[in-house]
Image (cartoon, rainbow, N blue to C red; front, side, top):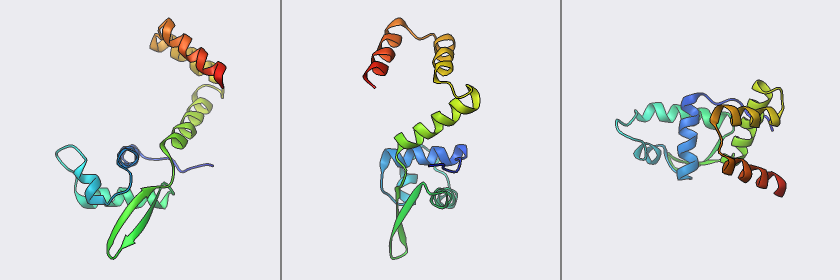
Length: 120
């Protein structure tokens, strides 16, 4: 499934929604660090996330309770595939090589990664 790309602000709000789960815009704002953003700003982002297919809602009168339609894991996989395609020529091997070189993965981390790959 191809999802529309999220802006950095949308992704930040989506990360919060994945962490909290179902909630209203006010409940999401309550979980944000101070200074709290304006209600209208977060409401706009949430409506954008809904129009892009990331969120659904249930109406209780004039109050909307939002919930994720896309799991964090599904989004992570889709984003990683896009990253590999765009920056590593579609090669996971190139991505892992880059990580080893740039991130200085320890031998223990490499062994754990190899063990995980063997399980797949």
